[in-house]
Image 1 (cartoon, rainbow, N blue to C red):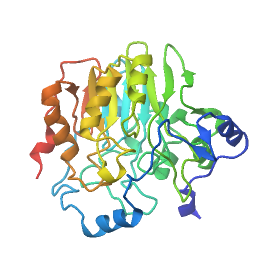
Image 2: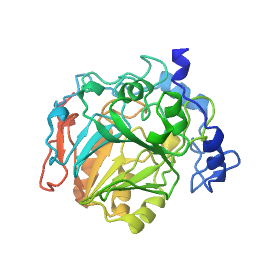
Image 3: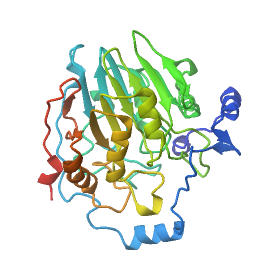
Image 4: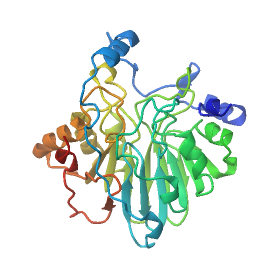
Length: 348
């Protein structure tokens, strides 16, 4: 059944053998570096469901359409070094002549069930048809808001190589990607690409799973090293000591891309608050910060614009250079002087 394909496929065969040999896989599942309950102590799933159904914040979604810009990605010159954010945790990078696409979700839905977690009005501006050939598709973990079945299927003919966390390749092979196009990575493994490009898989504090089983595939962050820049791709992660370890081993970074949104005190270990995002940026020794994981889907009970409002207000004291593009707006990766407006303040 087409619907069931959306769930993907659990690792088996040689991939499962490799997983079972990983030092991060114990007691039948992948483990975080620190003890990481998915729910904070004292919180239960029934309490979370009750709050979601009966205590929902009326401002989790904007009352007007999200603004956007349509940058023509198909007509970029090879010497343009840019990043384009598509909302939530999806973005495109062209840097030093190579193209990268991270955690793309273009179906307008962040759930296995159609229409149950729809994108905000105006936020679903781009489609696979708007993309050029992608040299490297990078997947941080297999949650629906990062690994979208419909998008991945449509991308097949445009992607040269996939880089993903260990075990996620099983989903991709099930959906028709050839195994020789997939690089699966465990924490602290390195992929030497070409012409001075390197990718290091580094830890994150999160979890995985698309069905009823959890943590059978790994979740990662990445260090993307090109001939001229070093970028930290954070994926989803709660705050922990791994940020300072990554900063000490791989930093400083020209840019850190960190999740800032969908947090809640009831799941404080697996997502970062704005305060923690600033701490992580300092730990990573990053020159600039791009906050993501907001602006497209409502997956927590905070106001939709709170992550950016809080982050920028807190940053007035720390003065970290924060990049806040509209969806589709070109960020010039080598222009530290670029200033972007606080677009969310113009919405009601």
